[in-house]
Image (tube, rainbow, N blue to C red; front, side):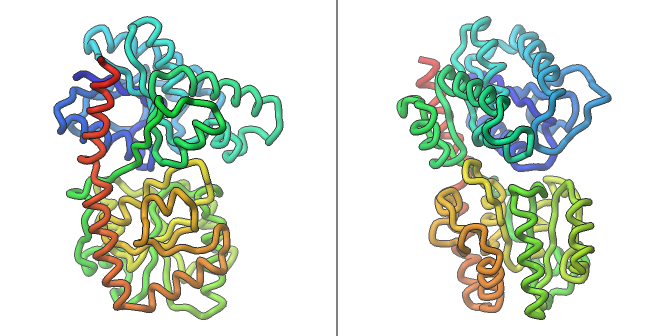
Length: 386
């Protein structure tokens, strides 16, 4: 079966959305599908997956997530490129990531007469509002909401990266449950493994006897970075010896904030981490943290944490509960004091840490492998193709 994936994003740029696209495509190829990806001009190709790009736009090099008024032009070019690729690739099905990809897919569907599956990773309207693209209640919000409603109800089928996302599409947007399925994120459990701590710590320049919390992902407000700095402040006031390794981008603004708060001795910012280095870098930690605040998006970093055998402290949300189950350490939502307390408690209990490390790794292998997710997708493809 030939699958054309639409990725309206600078794939690959070492962030969560792109990891889902890559690992999903690779697992499908290993399951016997032919997959190609059509994406923006920038980013980098990943091995083993045919990738086609729109013409170069040197003036647009944004790699971070979030909306831009330049993107409609890029999406027009993406439609043209996908149409061109389809003539030789001859796909059986269109698999569109994000709402932009699904909108392009709707246009392609009219021309190619192919079924369209939308891979939803959250609400378009909420994401734009979270990124400050428009204000709540504004005309732009109403316009984007109407567009989102059109896209949601025009795709032949929608998969979501969380059960919460599927429920939201059904209850808020009126999408029939027969057209919905949660195919939550997964992890390559062969690539993401726990490396010896000595090798990982020497890489980041931290002594093995220092308690270390790691974070890997985008650095912005709705990922909870402002809250995380408050957590670190609280721990500093308690004279804690815990240190934080914050990996990801864009980091410059948060590095300045941490310096202004006099947290330099407690936190190290690495900047962007290559996907191929992620498992080694994560293995430096005793535990991981994810203070993500968005209630409509998945939390893909948790799968990588789990596969690397890292007990993980998160806010208590339905999405996090679905992923971590009883292997998670939960703090009250958006409560920096409670998150600091949970971090201190778990990192001080070496026996519990060892047990939880085994438990999170076992859950990643048994419930969250991309091999399992690929089987679900292939069966769904077959049903749509029929």
